[in-house]
Image (cartoon, rainbow, N blue to C red; front, side, top):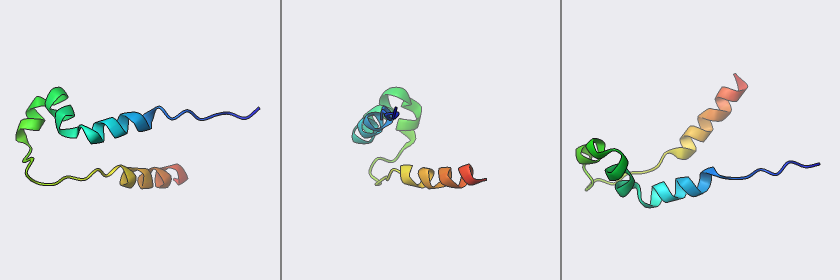
Length: 58
């Protein structure tokens, strides 16, 4: 019997990326107020995934 992998994580990541400023404003009000939103930002989720492979081999 094959095991199916269910992806529960991706929809949440997509929603947070899409509404990132509003997400921070709602959940982390002080952090939102301290951020200069005129400057661009980028998500570094792929860098974290690269580190995960290194940890698994250690």
